Image (cartoon, rainbow, N blue to C red; front, top):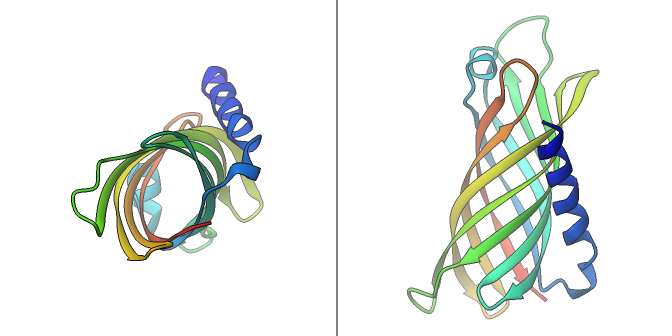
Length: 172
């Protein structure tokens, strides 16, 4: 567990040293769906919102630092809504352009997740994996559609959920 947390911290810090070379700004939001049984039993679909910056590493590989909020509505009385705040460092592998307008990609990373209800938050390490499409809308902007799988290493049973992010990637 401590290794994953250390890995997440190193990933976030490693990407944090290069914001001056940022080439892309990401803004996104969308729906989120709980997956792990404990989360799925008590909460229903919710929303997510986030921002990120991306910078090139090599030809089709990009480093992306993200901050996200994923929130799920409560199905039970007496329990608050569940929220997950995260700061992650990710690697984004852009596939060769299939056409001039559409570019698929894969994304994987790790980071720190602050999750819980109301005043009962805990901080844990986690991973996220995703794939998506960049759809060119102008020479400097893309629409992005990105389903993700998030796994947070919590004590007892891991927390898992599927955010579907829709947003914009703006090239600087």
